[in-house]
Length: 141
Picture 1 (cartoon, rainbow, N blue to C red):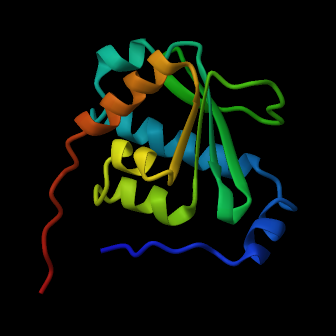
Picture 2: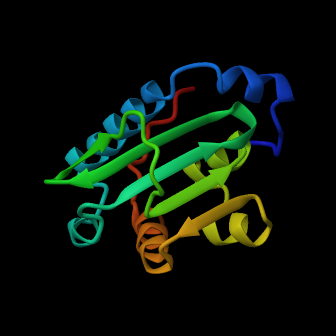
């Protein structure tokens, strides 16, 4: 179980000083691996074509901008325009979401996750996240 926590303010201040493109490149790489593993539904991916996204980790001072097009995710370097959809949360909320300990609706209604931008696109992404069937990993004793 991942506890609720907030990184000390130092991390946010320090995080803003570093280049943000590595975060975007890493996230795009992970999303492309999910496509290759057929974890993301193709019909939902088609609805993301040409759209831009921004993920902001508030307490880490980091952000990742990326887009989807031509069957893959690509990082957006030096992204300065308004994205179609923005997700903002502290690191612990994103970790609980990824670990499936909490769903996007719960985090949103508890004001731990902010979703801004195109409402219809937000619903598509939320439904896509909820539809992902993560493979079962073997337990080691």
